[in-house]
Structures are given as structure tokens and as C-alpha cells.
Image (cartoon, rainbow, N blue to C red; front, side, top):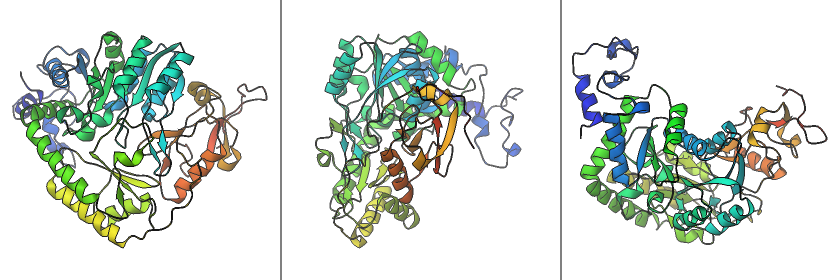
Length: 488
């Protein structure tokens, strides 16, 4: 087959003159920076159209579907975000009901808002000591579906940001008994297909729609993702329609070529690449497991949290029982060792290993953690309150759309307790909301926000970036919306 990335490379060296977009006209001298303008084109002769793919882009997507063993594959140059928006919109009627894992990415909640959907939340198990979400159980999914017969689809995240994998096969069987589709946000699991060292992809275990971010764990550029259709329970026409709505009408050929090149490279050299990667990864994990204070988290440490499998490319370092917290460990690695980790949490730090990592990179991380471990002191663990959980069960008093579209009032955080939030708040990354519009603001939520801020973690989503105030939906005594503007 003709490869998009090779054709783009060849075209960049040709003498074709562009009297078309984009405005840089493939002329590097037109910009102050050094960008790959020579390969940045629009929909021109011979390069197909992502939103009406009939040629080279159609072949590239079909090739990706073949590699993953799925029925159809759609490229997304707007990341997993656009794919999640499209999957939800295509699977649930506007105003309908969907069963959603409460630890989903904010993009899912944006889909609920845009389509005015009524969510039923299924909560993951949680390890309160480490502050890590576990898996979603098939038993919980079945119970909620029995109680909510009008649910039109189920959406869960697996693996989670922290590498926790739920029992997709059993969940899919439950969902399919109710004759509805299962959508799996597998954004962090695009690499599963390429090595038995990792868990099995949801695309092979009965999920109907699977979304993967190539850029997260594969050698592909940021913002590249795919939506896989894995069964006949999916309306392909609707998926195509909504992918066209949520993606730019001017998709980047550099990003699409990056996906095509990624697939070509893994087809040719993936077996050897992943063999070397998993060897270096396992060697690093064995070395890191010997640290006495900064603990490398293993699945065995998360017992009773509904974990079915675990992605060992996620390197989680617990600071529980030590003299430092997650934020401080993250700062040390960055400032002293010039190692940028993926995420800092209250009690741990997350690093993502991927096939692009080198042996030298693993050695640098191991040496840094070992040095920090040697100088860190053990302390007695404080007795943590059972309420210190990021995704405590919240009371939903209004739909997301009702709360976001209502007249709003701004309250100091401590005075907002009992009100209905009109805003999202989340730690970013990973972008999982700790409160969703329509949920009742609780004292626990306020205390969590304050604790996160004190520890240097970044609370985002609130329109007041200082997190001193929050907008609440204005309601009268009967619980109906009031006509009261938000106070700035």
C-alpha cells in the first residue's frame, strides 16, 4: 500500500507551488521558528480527505484496523477527546441515559453536557491508603443496569491513568445481555496489542467501541488517537457523522502521517522494539522494587480494589509513610535530576514508560529514585480519614446541562456547602472531575480542595483559578432555578 507519511515526505521535496492554505506556503522563512512547514498541507490532489476518505487516508485507517483486529478504525487528530465525544453522541440519544464510570476523563462529561444526557455513575473501588482508584466490577455494572433499564450504553476507563485494568470480558457479557454497547476509553492502552507482557486490549475482549491515544504510549505525535469499531452494535454512520462534527475540518496531515508512520514502524519492527522495551522496563522495575521507602507500586499492593490486571508500563512511586509527599517527589525529580514525570498526586508520582524509552532513560530514573530513597526518612503513617477520597459518592441534584446553563451565583468555597455546583473541578492531570456540575457541594469536597492546594497540587476547572470561590446554580426554595446572575 502507498504510505501517507512517505508520500508527504516526497511531496515536500517537489516543486509544486501552493496557491492554497495554509498561509505559510511551505516557506520556512515565513516564520520565526523552525517548523516542518514543507510537509504541512491541506486537502490537495492525491492526499484524500479525512472526512470523506476514499484513497490514501482510507487505506491508512484500514491498515490500523487490520493491525488491531477491529472492524473499522477512525483517525482522530483531536485526540481521544474527539473520539470520546463522538462515541457517546453516536451511542446515546440526546437526553438519554448512560452508565458511566465516575473516574472517566473530563471529555466524557463534556459529552454528557453537549447531549444533555442523564448519567448513572458506577464508582471504582479505591485504595484509600495509596489514594489510587481500582477497577470497575461487572457485578456493579449489572446491578446498575438492572435498576436503570433505560440506559442506552455503558462507558468505562480501562486502563486507568494509573494502569488499572478492569475485567472487560465479563463486563462486556453483562452489557450485551442488556443489548446495549460497551464503550471503553483505552486511551492509555494503545500499546497492549504489541506485547503479551501487557494486558489484553478491550478490542479483543468484547468491547464495542474502543478509543486509544497513539501519542500516549506509542511513537506518534501529540494529539493523535483512534476510535475502533469492534462489533455490529455500533452505528457506523453516526460515528462518522460525529467524528466530523467534533474534529477540525482542516485535519493536520503531519499528525495523520505520524499515525501512519507509527503503524508502519510497528508492523516492521514492533516485535523487536517491544522485546527490548519490555526487557528494559522489567529490569528497571526489579531494580526500583528494592528501594525501601519510595515504594514502586505493584498490583499485589492494591488488593481488594477490583483490579483484574495491571499495566506494568505505569511506574507509580508511593510516598506513603515517608517524610515527603507526591508533589515534593515530583519537584525533586524535575529540579535536581531533570526528569519530568507524568503526574503528581497527593501520595504518589506517576511515570509513563513507553516503547520510545531508552536504557539510558531507565537508568537515570532508577538512579534518581535510589538517591532520593536513601535520603528520605520513614515516618509513622497518619491515620487517614475514610472521607479522604477523590471520588466520594456525590449527590446529583441537577443534570450537568441544567447546572451549567442555569443562572449562577459565586460563593466563597467554605460558604458553598450544600449548594449545587455549576462548575467542574479536577486535578490535572489526569482530568478526572472531583466534582461535576449538578452535584451537591460537600464539606468533604471543600476540605479536599484545600488539602490539594496546600500540598502544591493543581486544582483546575473552576473559573476562579485561585480556587477561593465556586459558582453554584441559583435555585429557589422549591429547588427550581432562580434568575440570579453570578457575582464576579
